[in-house]
Length: 225
Image (cartoon, rainbow, N blue to C red; front, side, top):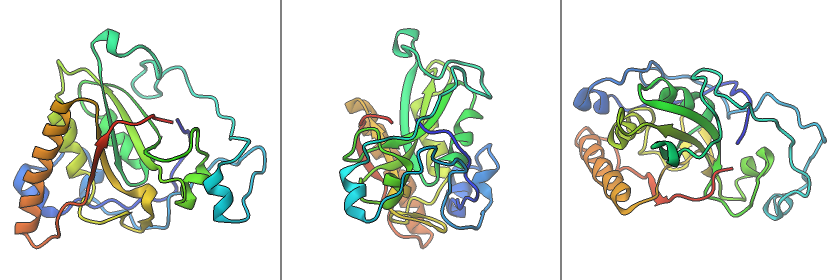
């Protein structure tokens, strides 16, 4: 789990998505923010640096020490708990730089808590610099804890598709690299089927309006760091 601030973002959901499926309730999906790669505004207290990509791939021996708040700064709910025992569900998605993406989900009614971090790579407890190297294979992701009695997994997916361009491979706007890839993770066969169905529906609309095919990765839910 990571804490910081994204200096600039680049998100653009194709207009065809909003025209066909209705505009989303958040503002970021309907605006484009130009800029360079997402940058964490937090200095590494250990002054870690790496001389080459091989060092990144091996993983650092000292990780950035960060204290995670006990409660969500906006929603006021716990950041870590036995969510399943409370009847809450977990979704894990990647749609570019995670700082701007996280807000789209915490604004949804029925979302209990959100957190940003890394998933889908080869290293355990990856550092920010390791992920930015592109050598570990991690994606920047948002973990969404939600109440399925209030908001459905399908609605989470709708917000996901409407909040970025799923037709660009390893890129969102000016943010380029495998860490910015479009990805949705599933934990059950039912979730996998729901993801694939919604992907196919959105892809059909996009291609009918001149966009390329959806290139979003669909994978089994990995460890969230």
